[in-house]
Image (cartoon, rainbow, N blue to C red; front, side):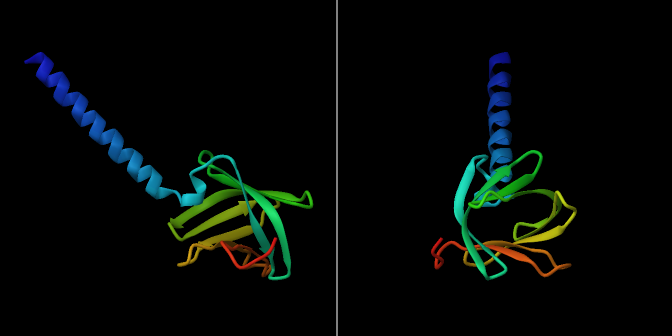
Length: 126
């Protein structure tokens, strides 16, 4: 009887852990799952196209962008609106709105100064 209870408890614990892991993976965008640098093309204000490296951290929820010319910026999560919209604050105090488009592109927009950074999946030569 005791062995049966332990077996049932272990099975229930495994199910809860699996469900929790699935929720956790669904919570973060696909690109935010890894903690290593991801090389991509970055487009600043539709004018400057340059290779960059993005580094996402799960905890604390931050990411950084390191441009090929050496400039880098760290962004801290302020508000997680939904899977397609988040608000970040850079180390200078700027507020950036992160978005995910239907075709998988992502970007940041600073509504106060009009600057934006776009991370296209394709179509740009960096």
